[in-house]
Image (cartoon, rainbow, N blue to C red; front, side, top):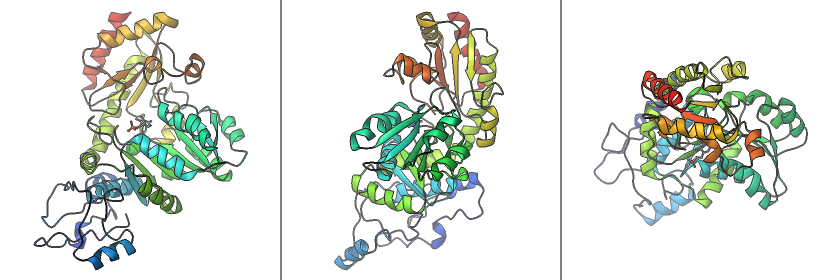
Amino acid sequence: MDDTSPNTPASGAPAPRPADTAGPDGWHPRTTLIHAGTRRSGFEETSEALFMTSGYVYGSAEAAEHAFANDGSRFVYSRFRNPTVAMFEDRLAAYEGYGRCFATASGMAAVFAAVMALVGAGGRIVASRALFGSCLYIVKDLAPRYGITTELVDATDRAGWERALARPADLVFLETPSNPCLEVVDLAHVTALAHAAGAKVIVDNVFATPVLQKPRAFGVDVVVYSATKHIDGQGRCLGGAILCDGEVAATLAVFLRHTGPAMSPFNAWVLLKGLETLELRVRAQCEGALAVARFLEGHPAVARVAYPGLPSHPQHDLAARQMAGGGPLVAFDLRGDGEETKARAFRTMNALGLILISNNLGDAKSLITHPATTTHQRLSAEEKAELGISPGTLRLSVGLEDPADLIADLRRALDAAH
Ligand SMILES: *Cc1c(COP(=O)(O)O)cnc(C)c1O
Protein backbone atom coordinates (compact mmCIF):
# COMPACT_ATOMS: atom_id res chain seq x y z
CA MET A 1 0.00 0.00 0.00
CA ASP A 2 2.98 2.28 0.43
CA ASP A 3 3.89 2.33 -3.23
CA THR A 4 2.16 4.98 -5.26
CA SER A 5 5.11 5.65 -7.56
CA PRO A 6 5.55 2.67 -9.88
CA ASN A 7 8.60 2.63 -12.07
CA THR A 8 8.53 4.83 -15.12
CA PRO A 9 7.65 2.74 -18.19
CA ALA A 10 10.28 2.22 -20.89
CA SER A 11 10.92 4.87 -23.53
CA GLY A 12 7.94 5.82 -25.66
CA ALA A 13 5.30 4.92 -23.10
CA PRO A 14 3.89 7.80 -21.09
CA ALA A 15 4.32 7.65 -17.31
CA PRO A 16 1.19 6.45 -15.51
CA ARG A 17 -1.08 9.25 -14.36
CA PRO A 18 -1.64 9.47 -10.60
CA ALA A 19 -5.30 8.53 -11.15
CA ASP A 20 -4.15 5.19 -12.56
CA THR A 21 -3.25 3.95 -9.13
CA ALA A 22 -6.71 3.27 -7.84
CA GLY A 23 -7.52 4.27 -4.28
CA PRO A 24 -10.24 2.58 -2.30
CA ASP A 25 -11.54 5.77 -0.64
CA GLY A 26 -15.28 5.65 -0.29
CA TRP A 27 -15.73 2.53 -2.40
CA HIS A 28 -18.00 -0.28 -1.36
CA PRO A 29 -16.30 -3.65 -0.86
CA ARG A 30 -17.39 -5.11 -4.19
CA THR A 31 -15.98 -2.14 -6.05
CA THR A 32 -12.73 -2.43 -4.10
CA LEU A 33 -12.36 -6.05 -5.25
CA ILE A 34 -12.50 -4.92 -8.87
CA HIS A 35 -10.48 -1.69 -8.88
CA ALA A 36 -8.25 -1.27 -5.80
CA GLY A 37 -4.52 -1.51 -6.36
CA THR A 38 -4.71 -1.24 -10.16
CA ARG A 39 -1.47 0.03 -11.69
CA ARG A 40 -1.88 0.74 -15.39
CA SER A 41 1.19 0.66 -17.58
CA GLY A 42 1.74 3.26 -20.28
CA PHE A 43 -0.45 1.19 -22.62
CA GLU A 44 -3.58 2.07 -20.65
CA GLU A 45 -4.81 -1.55 -20.60
CA THR A 46 -8.19 -2.37 -19.05
CA SER A 47 -7.23 -5.72 -17.55
CA GLU A 48 -4.29 -5.89 -15.14
CA ALA A 49 -0.96 -6.44 -16.91
CA LEU A 50 1.10 -9.54 -16.23
CA PHE A 51 4.67 -8.49 -15.50
CA MET A 52 6.66 -11.71 -15.90
CA THR A 53 10.00 -10.25 -14.92
CA SER A 54 12.44 -11.11 -12.18
CA GLY A 55 14.40 -7.87 -12.38
CA TYR A 56 14.20 -4.22 -13.41
CA VAL A 57 16.61 -1.94 -15.23
CA TYR A 58 17.94 1.49 -14.36
CA GLY A 59 18.63 4.40 -16.67
CA SER A 60 21.95 5.05 -14.96
CA ALA A 61 24.23 3.80 -12.20
CA GLU A 62 23.01 6.73 -10.14
CA ALA A 63 19.39 5.61 -10.55
CA ALA A 64 20.33 2.12 -9.30
CA GLU A 65 22.14 3.61 -6.30
CA HIS A 66 19.12 5.80 -5.59
CA ALA A 67 16.74 2.84 -5.84
CA PHE A 68 18.68 0.89 -3.22
CA ALA A 69 19.04 3.90 -0.92
CA ASN A 70 15.30 4.60 -1.06
CA ASP A 71 13.96 1.19 -0.11
CA GLY A 72 10.49 0.56 -1.48
CA SER A 73 10.31 3.58 -3.76
CA ARG A 74 10.50 1.48 -6.93
CA PHE A 75 10.62 -2.13 -8.06
CA VAL A 76 14.13 -3.55 -7.82
CA TYR A 77 13.71 -7.35 -7.72
CA SER A 78 10.63 -9.57 -7.86
CA ARG A 79 11.56 -11.48 -4.71
CA PHE A 80 10.79 -8.21 -2.90
CA ARG A 81 8.09 -6.74 -5.10
CA ASN A 82 6.57 -7.05 -8.56
CA PRO A 83 3.89 -4.82 -10.13
CA THR A 84 1.38 -7.64 -10.77
CA VAL A 85 1.92 -9.10 -7.31
CA ALA A 86 1.64 -5.60 -5.80
CA MET A 87 -1.75 -5.12 -7.46
CA PHE A 88 -2.99 -8.33 -5.86
CA GLU A 89 -1.54 -7.34 -2.47
CA ASP A 90 -2.99 -3.84 -2.50
CA ARG A 91 -6.41 -5.02 -3.63
CA LEU A 92 -6.70 -7.62 -0.88
CA ALA A 93 -5.32 -5.22 1.77
CA ALA A 94 -7.89 -2.58 0.76
CA TYR A 95 -10.69 -5.14 0.99
CA GLU A 96 -9.60 -6.45 4.40
CA GLY A 97 -8.79 -3.03 5.86
CA TYR A 98 -5.21 -3.88 6.82
CA GLY A 99 -2.32 -1.57 5.96
CA ARG A 100 -0.26 -4.27 4.27
CA CYS A 101 -0.68 -7.52 2.42
CA PHE A 102 2.22 -9.83 1.56
CA ALA A 103 1.54 -12.38 -1.16
CA THR A 104 3.26 -15.75 -0.83
CA ALA A 105 3.73 -18.83 -3.00
CA SER A 106 1.20 -20.90 -1.03
CA GLY A 107 -0.99 -20.73 2.03
CA MET A 108 1.56 -22.73 4.01
CA ALA A 109 4.34 -20.29 3.06
CA ALA A 110 2.13 -17.54 4.53
CA VAL A 111 1.48 -19.48 7.74
CA PHE A 112 5.13 -20.48 8.18
CA ALA A 113 6.41 -16.92 7.63
CA ALA A 114 3.81 -15.32 9.91
CA VAL A 115 4.55 -17.75 12.75
CA MET A 116 8.34 -17.81 12.43
CA ALA A 117 8.69 -14.04 11.96
CA LEU A 118 6.76 -13.33 15.15
CA VAL A 119 8.14 -15.84 17.67
CA GLY A 120 11.63 -17.04 18.56
CA ALA A 121 13.49 -19.35 20.93
CA GLY A 122 11.97 -19.28 24.41
CA GLY A 123 8.68 -18.09 22.98
CA ARG A 124 5.25 -19.54 23.66
CA ILE A 125 2.43 -20.27 21.20
CA VAL A 126 -1.16 -21.00 22.18
CA ALA A 127 -3.06 -22.56 19.28
CA SER A 128 -6.40 -24.16 18.63
CA ARG A 129 -6.27 -27.93 18.27
CA ALA A 130 -8.58 -27.95 15.26
CA LEU A 131 -6.17 -26.73 12.60
CA PHE A 132 -5.43 -27.56 8.98
CA GLY A 133 -2.95 -30.47 9.13
CA SER A 134 0.14 -28.59 7.95
CA CYS A 135 -0.58 -25.65 10.29
CA LEU A 136 -0.73 -28.13 13.16
CA TYR A 137 2.66 -29.52 12.04
CA ILE A 138 4.21 -26.04 12.16
CA VAL A 139 3.00 -25.10 15.66
CA LYS A 140 3.07 -28.56 17.25
CA ASP A 141 6.05 -30.35 15.65
CA LEU A 142 8.28 -27.75 14.02
CA ALA A 143 8.17 -24.79 16.43
CA PRO A 144 9.36 -26.88 19.44
CA ARG A 145 12.51 -27.80 17.46
CA TYR A 146 13.43 -24.10 17.65
CA GLY A 147 12.90 -23.79 21.39
CA ILE A 148 9.31 -22.61 21.19
CA THR A 149 6.65 -24.23 23.38
CA THR A 150 3.14 -24.75 22.07
CA GLU A 151 -0.05 -25.37 24.00
CA LEU A 152 -3.16 -26.60 22.16
CA VAL A 153 -6.68 -25.63 23.21
CA ASP A 154 -10.03 -27.01 22.03
CA ALA A 155 -11.51 -24.37 19.73
CA THR A 156 -14.79 -24.01 21.63
CA ASP A 157 -13.41 -24.39 25.19
CA ARG A 158 -13.73 -20.85 26.59
CA ALA A 159 -12.28 -21.81 29.98
CA GLY A 160 -9.43 -23.58 28.19
CA TRP A 161 -8.47 -20.38 26.33
CA GLU A 162 -8.71 -18.46 29.62
CA ARG A 163 -6.40 -20.94 31.39
CA ALA A 164 -3.86 -21.07 28.56
CA LEU A 165 -3.75 -17.29 28.25
CA ALA A 166 -3.55 -16.60 31.99
CA ARG A 167 0.23 -16.90 31.44
CA PRO A 168 2.29 -14.70 29.10
CA ALA A 169 2.40 -15.83 25.47
CA ASP A 170 3.88 -14.52 22.22
CA LEU A 171 1.46 -15.86 19.67
CA VAL A 172 -2.06 -17.19 19.37
CA PHE A 173 -2.79 -19.15 16.19
CA LEU A 174 -6.29 -20.29 15.32
CA GLU A 175 -8.66 -21.19 12.54
CA THR A 176 -12.39 -20.45 12.55
CA PRO A 177 -14.54 -22.12 11.36
CA SER A 178 -12.19 -25.07 11.76
CA ASN A 179 -11.27 -27.86 9.38
CA PRO A 180 -13.06 -30.20 8.97
CA CYS A 181 -15.85 -30.03 11.59
CA LEU A 182 -16.55 -26.28 11.40
CA GLU A 183 -16.18 -25.37 15.07
CA VAL A 184 -16.31 -21.62 15.69
CA VAL A 185 -13.81 -19.77 17.90
CA ASP A 186 -15.00 -16.58 19.61
CA LEU A 187 -12.62 -14.06 18.03
CA ALA A 188 -13.42 -11.14 20.36
CA HIS A 189 -12.98 -13.30 23.47
CA VAL A 190 -9.71 -14.96 22.43
CA THR A 191 -8.20 -11.77 21.01
CA ALA A 192 -8.85 -9.88 24.26
CA LEU A 193 -7.26 -12.71 26.29
CA ALA A 194 -4.30 -12.90 23.91
CA HIS A 195 -3.58 -9.20 24.03
CA ALA A 196 -3.77 -9.21 27.84
CA ALA A 197 -1.20 -12.05 27.78
CA GLY A 198 1.08 -10.02 25.49
CA ALA A 199 0.43 -12.19 22.43
CA LYS A 200 -0.22 -11.31 18.82
CA VAL A 201 -3.11 -13.15 17.20
CA ILE A 202 -2.91 -14.87 13.80
CA VAL A 203 -6.16 -16.11 12.27
CA ASP A 204 -6.26 -18.56 9.37
CA ASN A 205 -9.39 -17.19 7.69
CA VAL A 206 -9.58 -19.65 4.80
CA PHE A 207 -12.85 -21.37 5.71
CA ALA A 208 -14.69 -18.11 6.40
CA THR A 209 -13.19 -16.41 3.32
CA PRO A 210 -12.43 -12.65 3.20
CA VAL A 211 -16.09 -12.08 2.29
CA LEU A 212 -17.77 -13.53 5.38
CA GLN A 213 -15.44 -12.73 8.26
CA LYS A 214 -13.31 -9.64 8.97
CA PRO A 215 -10.96 -10.63 11.82
CA ARG A 216 -9.55 -7.09 11.95
CA ALA A 217 -12.88 -5.89 13.36
CA PHE A 218 -12.22 -8.14 16.39
CA GLY A 219 -8.70 -6.82 16.94
CA VAL A 220 -6.89 -9.70 15.22
CA ASP A 221 -3.31 -8.69 14.40
CA VAL A 222 -2.58 -10.94 11.42
CA VAL A 223 -4.82 -12.75 8.93
CA VAL A 224 -3.44 -15.52 6.73
CA TYR A 225 -4.98 -17.06 3.63
CA SER A 226 -4.46 -19.93 1.34
CA ALA A 227 -5.41 -17.99 -1.81
CA THR A 228 -5.42 -21.41 -3.47
CA LYS A 229 -8.93 -21.85 -2.09
CA HIS A 230 -11.79 -19.35 -2.56
CA ILE A 231 -9.64 -16.41 -3.68
CA ASP A 232 -8.67 -18.30 -6.82
CA GLY A 233 -11.93 -20.18 -6.54
CA GLN A 234 -11.44 -22.07 -9.75
CA GLY A 235 -8.81 -24.60 -8.74
CA ARG A 236 -6.00 -23.24 -10.91
CA CYS A 237 -3.03 -22.17 -8.83
CA LEU A 238 -1.42 -21.99 -5.41
CA GLY A 239 -1.04 -18.77 -3.49
CA GLY A 240 -1.08 -17.31 -0.02
CA ALA A 241 -1.43 -13.96 1.71
CA ILE A 242 -0.55 -12.35 5.03
CA LEU A 243 -2.43 -9.23 6.13
CA CYS A 244 -1.28 -7.01 8.97
CA ASP A 245 -0.39 -3.48 10.10
CA GLY A 246 2.44 -1.38 11.50
CA GLU A 247 5.27 -3.05 13.38
CA VAL A 248 4.18 -6.57 12.49
CA ALA A 249 4.26 -5.56 8.82
CA ALA A 250 7.74 -4.09 9.20
CA THR A 251 8.99 -7.33 10.80
CA LEU A 252 7.37 -9.46 8.12
CA ALA A 253 8.69 -7.31 5.26
CA VAL A 254 12.29 -8.03 6.34
CA PHE A 255 11.61 -11.73 7.00
CA LEU A 256 9.95 -12.28 3.61
CA ARG A 257 12.49 -10.28 1.63
CA HIS A 258 15.34 -12.44 2.90
CA THR A 259 13.63 -15.84 3.01
CA GLY A 260 11.94 -15.56 -0.40
CA PRO A 261 8.53 -17.34 -0.38
CA ALA A 262 7.36 -14.91 -3.09
CA MET A 263 4.23 -15.39 -5.20
CA SER A 264 4.76 -15.86 -8.93
CA PRO A 265 3.50 -12.86 -10.99
CA PHE A 266 1.51 -15.31 -13.10
CA ASN A 267 -0.30 -16.66 -10.06
CA ALA A 268 -0.88 -13.11 -8.81
CA TRP A 269 -2.49 -12.28 -12.14
CA VAL A 270 -4.79 -15.31 -11.94
CA LEU A 271 -5.68 -14.45 -8.34
CA LEU A 272 -6.41 -10.80 -9.22
CA LYS A 273 -9.05 -12.12 -11.60
CA GLY A 274 -10.29 -14.33 -8.77
CA LEU A 275 -10.71 -11.32 -6.49
CA GLU A 276 -12.96 -9.60 -9.04
CA THR A 277 -15.63 -12.27 -8.63
CA LEU A 278 -14.90 -13.34 -5.03
CA GLU A 279 -18.00 -11.83 -3.40
CA LEU A 280 -20.38 -13.08 -6.05
CA ARG A 281 -18.94 -16.56 -5.93
CA VAL A 282 -18.77 -16.90 -2.14
CA ARG A 283 -22.34 -15.61 -1.72
CA ALA A 284 -23.62 -18.11 -4.28
CA GLN A 285 -21.62 -20.90 -2.62
CA CYS A 286 -23.10 -19.99 0.77
CA GLU A 287 -26.60 -20.19 -0.65
CA GLY A 288 -25.81 -23.60 -2.09
CA ALA A 289 -24.17 -24.78 1.13
CA LEU A 290 -27.20 -23.77 3.21
CA ALA A 291 -29.58 -25.59 0.86
CA VAL A 292 -27.38 -28.70 0.91
CA ALA A 293 -26.99 -28.56 4.72
CA ARG A 294 -30.78 -28.35 5.15
CA PHE A 295 -31.27 -31.30 2.83
CA LEU A 296 -28.65 -33.40 4.65
CA GLU A 297 -30.20 -32.60 8.02
CA GLY A 298 -33.45 -34.13 6.81
CA HIS A 299 -31.94 -37.30 5.31
CA PRO A 300 -32.32 -40.49 7.41
CA ALA A 301 -28.77 -41.71 6.59
CA VAL A 302 -27.22 -38.60 8.16
CA ALA A 303 -26.60 -38.55 11.92
CA ARG A 304 -25.28 -35.00 12.25
CA VAL A 305 -24.68 -31.94 10.08
CA ALA A 306 -22.12 -29.30 11.08
CA TYR A 307 -22.90 -26.05 9.30
CA PRO A 308 -22.53 -22.69 11.10
CA GLY A 309 -25.50 -21.30 9.16
CA LEU A 310 -27.94 -23.86 10.61
CA PRO A 311 -29.70 -23.18 13.94
CA SER A 312 -28.66 -26.74 14.98
CA HIS A 313 -24.97 -25.73 15.00
CA PRO A 314 -23.88 -25.49 18.66
CA GLN A 315 -22.39 -22.04 18.04
CA HIS A 316 -24.92 -20.74 15.56
CA ASP A 317 -25.44 -17.47 17.49
CA LEU A 318 -21.72 -16.78 17.71
CA ALA A 319 -21.31 -17.60 14.02
CA ALA A 320 -24.14 -15.21 13.17
CA ARG A 321 -22.40 -12.41 15.13
CA GLN A 322 -18.99 -13.11 13.70
CA MET A 323 -19.69 -14.17 10.12
CA ALA A 324 -21.87 -12.76 7.35
CA GLY A 325 -23.01 -16.23 6.30
CA GLY A 326 -22.57 -19.89 7.12
CA GLY A 327 -19.70 -20.39 4.66
CA PRO A 328 -19.12 -22.61 1.65
CA LEU A 329 -18.23 -25.80 3.59
CA VAL A 330 -20.48 -28.40 5.15
CA ALA A 331 -19.41 -31.35 7.31
CA PHE A 332 -21.68 -34.30 8.08
CA ASP A 333 -21.58 -37.66 9.82
CA LEU A 334 -23.27 -40.74 8.45
CA ARG A 335 -25.18 -42.97 10.84
CA GLY A 336 -23.48 -46.06 12.22
CA ASP A 337 -20.34 -47.16 14.05
CA GLY A 338 -16.78 -48.07 13.18
CA GLU A 339 -15.59 -49.76 9.99
CA GLU A 340 -19.09 -50.26 8.63
CA THR A 341 -19.57 -46.47 8.67
CA LYS A 342 -16.32 -45.99 6.79
CA ALA A 343 -17.52 -48.45 4.14
CA ARG A 344 -20.79 -46.55 3.92
CA ALA A 345 -18.96 -43.23 3.57
CA PHE A 346 -16.84 -44.71 0.76
CA ARG A 347 -19.93 -46.16 -0.96
CA THR A 348 -21.62 -42.76 -0.76
CA MET A 349 -18.63 -40.97 -2.27
CA ASN A 350 -18.23 -43.57 -5.01
CA ALA A 351 -21.92 -43.29 -5.91
CA LEU A 352 -21.72 -39.53 -6.51
CA GLY A 353 -21.91 -38.54 -10.15
CA LEU A 354 -21.52 -34.76 -10.05
CA ILE A 355 -19.68 -33.99 -6.81
CA LEU A 356 -16.01 -34.84 -7.23
CA ILE A 357 -13.77 -36.67 -4.75
CA SER A 358 -10.92 -34.31 -3.83
CA ASN A 359 -9.11 -33.18 -0.69
CA ASN A 360 -8.97 -29.64 -2.14
CA LEU A 361 -11.66 -27.06 -1.40
CA GLY A 362 -12.92 -23.65 -2.46
CA ASP A 363 -13.39 -24.59 -6.12
CA ALA A 364 -16.28 -23.71 -8.44
CA LYS A 365 -16.74 -27.48 -8.63
CA SER A 366 -18.18 -29.16 -5.52
CA LEU A 367 -15.62 -31.42 -3.86
CA ILE A 368 -16.06 -34.07 -1.19
CA THR A 369 -13.46 -35.67 1.05
CA HIS A 370 -13.27 -38.31 3.78
CA PRO A 371 -11.05 -36.55 6.35
CA ALA A 372 -10.27 -39.65 8.46
CA THR A 373 -8.48 -41.38 5.57
CA THR A 374 -7.06 -38.36 3.71
CA THR A 375 -6.45 -34.89 5.18
CA HIS A 376 -6.36 -36.18 8.78
CA GLN A 377 -5.01 -39.68 8.11
CA ARG A 378 -1.82 -39.04 10.13
CA LEU A 379 -3.74 -38.36 13.36
CA SER A 380 -4.28 -41.06 15.97
CA ALA A 381 -7.80 -42.35 16.61
CA GLU A 382 -7.81 -40.30 19.83
CA GLU A 383 -6.77 -37.10 18.07
CA LYS A 384 -9.41 -37.65 15.40
CA ALA A 385 -12.06 -38.11 18.08
CA GLU A 386 -10.96 -34.88 19.78
CA LEU A 387 -11.57 -33.05 16.51
CA GLY A 388 -14.94 -34.71 15.98
CA ILE A 389 -13.72 -36.76 13.00
CA SER A 390 -15.38 -40.18 12.87
CA PRO A 391 -15.14 -42.90 10.18
CA GLY A 392 -18.46 -41.58 8.89
CA THR A 393 -17.45 -37.89 8.63
CA LEU A 394 -17.54 -36.30 5.19
CA ARG A 395 -16.50 -32.74 4.31
CA LEU A 396 -18.18 -31.08 1.36
CA SER A 397 -16.88 -27.93 -0.31
CA VAL A 398 -19.88 -26.51 -2.12
CA GLY A 399 -19.18 -25.09 -5.57
CA LEU A 400 -21.15 -22.97 -7.98
CA GLU A 401 -23.41 -25.64 -9.46
CA ASP A 402 -27.18 -25.31 -9.12
CA PRO A 403 -27.92 -26.47 -5.56
CA ALA A 404 -30.80 -28.62 -6.88
CA ASP A 405 -28.31 -30.71 -8.88
CA LEU A 406 -26.04 -31.12 -5.84
CA ILE A 407 -28.96 -32.22 -3.69
CA ALA A 408 -30.14 -34.69 -6.36
CA ASP A 409 -26.62 -36.14 -6.56
CA LEU A 410 -26.34 -36.47 -2.77
CA ARG A 411 -29.81 -37.99 -2.48
CA ARG A 412 -29.02 -40.59 -5.12
CA ALA A 413 -25.68 -41.46 -3.49
CA LEU A 414 -27.04 -41.61 0.08
CA ASP A 415 -30.01 -43.73 -0.96
CA ALA A 416 -27.78 -46.11 -2.92
CA ALA A 417 -25.29 -46.52 -0.06
CA HIS A 418 -27.80 -47.26 2.71
C1 LIG B 1 -5.39 -25.16 2.19
C2 LIG B 1 -5.25 -24.56 3.51
C3 LIG B 1 -4.01 -24.12 3.99
C4 LIG B 1 -2.74 -24.29 3.19
O1 LIG B 1 -2.73 -23.60 1.98
P1 LIG B 1 -1.91 -24.07 0.68
O2 LIG B 1 -2.22 -23.01 -0.31
O3 LIG B 1 -2.38 -25.43 0.32
O4 LIG B 1 -0.45 -24.09 1.06
C5 LIG B 1 -3.97 -23.56 5.25
N1 LIG B 1 -5.07 -23.44 6.01
C6 LIG B 1 -6.28 -23.86 5.59
C7 LIG B 1 -7.47 -23.72 6.48
C8 LIG B 1 -6.42 -24.43 4.33
O5 LIG B 1 -7.62 -24.86 3.91
